[in-house]
Image (cartoon, rainbow, N blue to C red; front, side, top):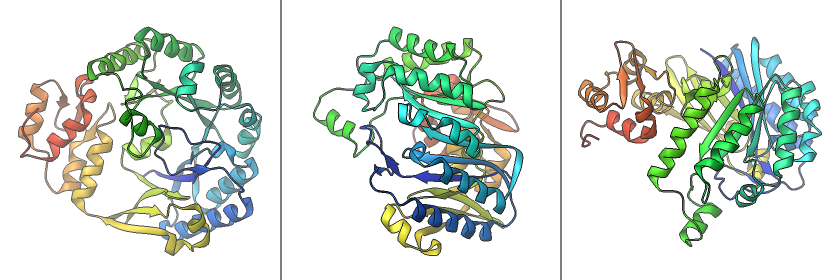
Length: 380
């Protein structure tokens, strides 16, 4: 079983209005305290996992590119000492495209980072202002060019289906990204999450998301352009040529094991025949003050919970799920009647080994999953 480590850095220079992650404004940060706490947590988890082959390390946030490269290097070294890094281990760090962070890219490469995930979000200055970003379109392009020269792989994040954005605008923006030769694109339709600044703006009727049919048009155009460029979707929102997929995110989508350290980080860990959900306490001050056995909450996942998570995550992939693995986790097969109904509607494909969504099914992913999990729901 593949195994990865997620390290959450909770600080940002500013909080984006669409963000609902566990993040805080970057204030006075004692790096030595963080190094000691995160190292202690890694050692605590190593005692629980035993010797495992480590396939990925992912620095997320927040804005982990605000971390000193020396701290990143130290944590990577600890991970490699505690576990057995695979020959092709992927070590990913999320970054913003500001000038200050660009200056650190080469130091991050020297620290061991071999994939950079750039939160560009848009190549349009007006859109960047709307999204609350603290970089310009010029900085975005400069950061992307530098990342492509510096790291083995680069992931580029863009947000589309924004208010007042036209399909032509999005086509130009996406083609601009693809022309750079970037290896991986994470392309997200704008969503409004509860308790965010965007939710308050929508509640005030300052603006509204495009209607569902328009959002579907944006999605279809995205697939068409990326397919033509040789970077088809391998997951609902992620595009890459074969071999350039995100190693760490594939752990989530194929329901492998990973640990999460840092405030509010999540993990899934198999112990014998049981699987546990593990969550770190969310507030940075509490996190630093507590020992590992107090800051991490562990919850056993029953077989039905595991099967549900596997279905929710696995159907995001174009390759879908293994029906045998689902049956093993759930203790029962998927409802054949529901599978047949969804297949007849053109939303699902299946054979004796696998089950996956069609392009039409991926547009209504959540509804399909609900159908498969509940026999008493009216059919779509």
